[in-house]
Length: 139
Image (cartoon, rainbow, N blue to C red; front, side, top):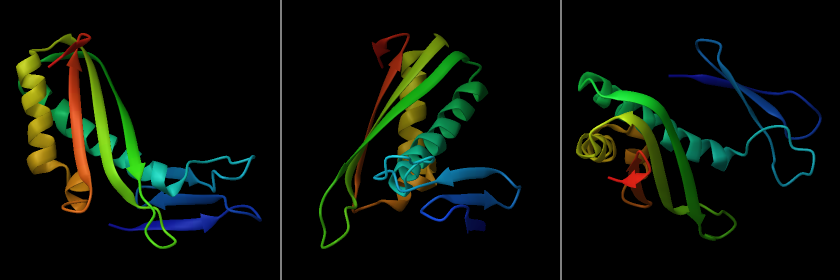
């Protein structure tokens, strides 16, 4: 796996490209005119994306009908010398459709306990927790 990063203005705006040519824009979001996401925000996005792919894949194999899927991710950071790494990350998944709540919860459990490489990367230094809501009810 390889990505390239190129600076695209005179400040902090970078374009990251993967081998397939797909891109994201990263910027210093402490600047008022930021045009991209911060590197730490991309980490939270990666957790949501990785586990989201797992959960959808598992539920599709179980023939669950997902009409909508979304997630919210929050990260708590701590000061360590000059850096501010994550102490904890919490993900909330919101699913709508003809979905068995027990299957949705099990899919999330499997993702975080077994499959999601992104969240596994943080072990044991960062606590990653999650909740699953199916049709507005907690699973």
